[in-house]
Image (cartoon, rainbow, N blue to C red):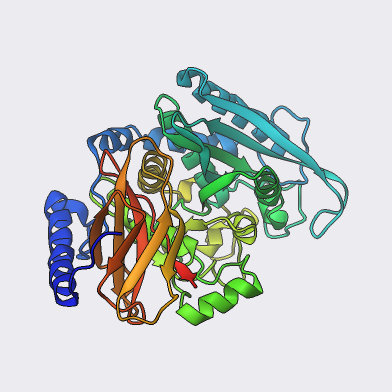
Length: 471
């Protein structure tokens, strides 16, 4: 066990480290603060690597626009629409998406595969008759730790005012051709690279009818015992313009729940005892997004919203949350409801309704794609989130001993303990422990929150693991 410094030493050193980390991150990316923001990076921020910057520069708003317009060209992509017409309906969109992902896979040298994941949904809410629901997936297999998986999705089905209207034109440009366009662009850019861990790019169906495609994919992953350490859905990320015309073009919302949807009574009792309402695995994932994607390389500010989703709404991350996977939702900063879930029409005042491609901002979508890319690529290249993190509580002391299980990554070089005041939303202090699996800090576990993250040879850090009490 590493020796414990004095409490005064820890407080002085970590305060200085936290300040230096903030200043260092700011100086390495002085422009890191996107336009209109003055927020300094947190102490845990990770500046983008040269490799990541090169990847982000390849994201192309023109390709994103072409994808959105192509999906709109199928007329409707309603889940209940025709599936055997080559030009109209969800079946035509499905076949085109599969062809696009297979085209991306060509550049991977066999590392990426594309497939259809289908099942027949029996009658259920918003599904009046047995209906084939098909997800279109591309999997880029990791070269070092392929068993560790990250998922990014958008839904390719669309709707109009009547959620059961499967024949009217439902362009679905913002909701959610924009999210699917991000998924395709990430697949294209990453296919020619070698992530250490596996990334799944998913265009899912059945979202508007009740998250059916995402639920099927999450259930399949769970049944296979897949170690999904992060999932993001991009849903309504097409425009920074609100219904009153105001614009917020350098901000994206990230919805991240606190109390886990999958929490058992035993886990709830532990959470209540330690005050862990703000430290779910999803909240740690959201902090990681801020650490790696809120900077000058993406040109974006990530606004984390401490709730699962918006009022009366839901997205494809929820089935993953319900199965115990960390998952979060990207959504534009303020929605214009005239351009989602609406029949295409012009009212008596001349106002245009409908989710049409002319209301999307493709440079904005490209910046959202860069946020996703910075997050996914860093997750896939960094060590996995530490497992088995515990705070030893067998004796009552004013110091804190943490233990964890060493990861299996071949380039793992050590660990860091992070901590913050219980009232702080961000980690504020970092302590380097070296390559050990236990460390004692001369600070009371009763007064602050602790976490553990892994570090590899390239200096990339994992998301933080929040320790549970160990008797």
